[in-house]
Image (cartoon, rainbow, N blue to C red; front, top):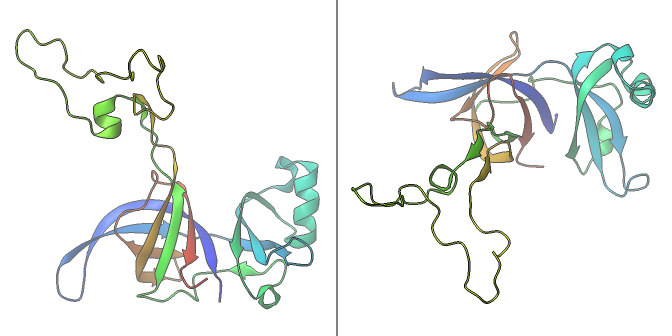
Amino acid sequence: MPIGIFGRKLGMTQIFDETGRIQAVTLVKAEVCQISQIKTTQTDGYNGIQVAYGQTSLNSLTKPQQGHLKKATGTGFKYFGEFRTEAPDNFKLGQELTLESFTVGQKLRVTGKSIGKGFAGCQKRHNFSRGPMTHGSKNHRLPGSIGAGTTPGRVYPGKKMAGRLGNNKITIKNTEILAVNIKEKVIVLKGSLPGKAHSLLKLQTTNN
């Protein structure tokens, strides 16, 4: 049984559950995933497997990557990720991980990058309240006081201010599988998931 897999977010849609209620879901397409390295406590200090995803030509990779993949899969891959496991002996190099072992009702931990929203102000980034919009007010969307006074005479690190919003690593826990289509290599997950359409997602079973 694979402990995890990588996939591409196709987008969101709606389905009807058994009771006839509409359920928001996210479709994820899981293409070829192969084990490119097996790590053990003797060689690496911990047990785990490295999974390669996103097939490409070997010539497009660096020579160290080519040598690494030739010994394991024989084909080129763009992306790599790790999954911890207590039984690395159950896996072998080049083994392909598929959706066949995932079942409806199973819970997954989904990791991906959230949508980047660029430079944002305090209201959008930290949910600050705005100032009065009445005539004469000069504080509509300003951050307000940021200093602590003459002492210490500086702004404390970590102060909530305007800055980059989004584009962070996000993990959604206990995401339920509602359907699995082996033929189309598509898995249907309950609710929303981080990232834009076609973004890379890491799906991991919660019992590992």
